[in-house]
Image (tube, rainbow, N blue to C red; front, top):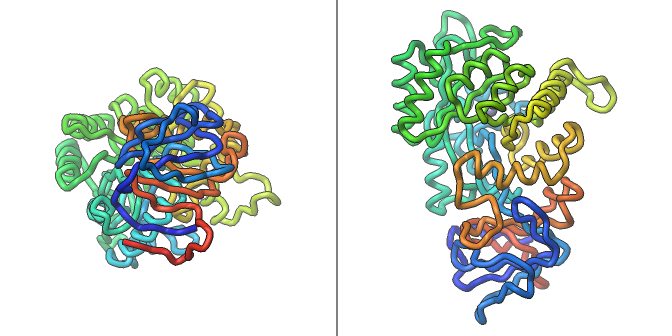
Length: 422
Ligand SMILES: [Zn+2]
């Protein structure tokens, strides 16, 4: 593989010739895709996609071309919790260290085929996600297109880190309390660059206790109204039935996690058209970090609960955003969520591929991407094999194009592996 770190679209049209194209809905064998500048200009049966005379052909034999994948729940400013606990990252790691790591995380995400990510909170790193997004947009560092939320909003006293009660330590999100502060916090974050607003509707108030609601109905509603007035959707961290219920009634746009959701609140989500971003990979990773020997020991209660709530959500007809809470586990391993959804949660590969492409594009209001279709952004990837049959094929990323620029491509004979250009 050669890595080309460039933000510029190719200067000549490019004809991509994979074995098949997953267009965001269905797989089509024998399709070709023409890219000109930063747009897809044609996609269809190879015989009907006429390359302009000066087009360069890239042969992707045996590969499936897909829309660039969309990660729905990442934390680029966190690294895996089994390397350093969340508490220690937030408390002991400087913002400079965290940003330096985040630049590497951004590159790994892109090379894993994720050309867009909704990054749901800097977890104590202030507004660093806004600068990270700008650095990617300006071509200073490689990375996915970012949707950012900055600090996120938590109810005063509910979040962490919690050290001695005598110490006021910086928290992993912005603490607010009361309707006025909620509105002020949302507006401040929007003013400093938040594309979405993230709210924590529930959390564990004390160490080793279950999650319970944090914000009142009025407080969440005030945050949602302030965000929506400014044209910003709202993502709500909610694991409890009551946290989900208050969030949905307040009008949030996505529910994150949903672990203890009940048939009743999932019916409400279905009725109001609120999708669930399930983050099963984070649940799986955390259970293993806590000592679960997966494969040789029975599932811990939290994983059993996750299976039950996911089954209830599907039965209720809730729609799913795709997002793994990557950062809890290593960046670039985003495909874990896809594999778990297929292998352990009963989805078929096509359902999951739709969620991670056209589905997330629709939920995140990204009309310019998520499908392979003329007129959309040239954010496309190719993987060896057929991920609509074997989802793990998404790990075998051979080709990544973002905004018409080739980020990764199959090595041609004689090419050096250290071909990094700027
Ligand atoms: Zn998260």
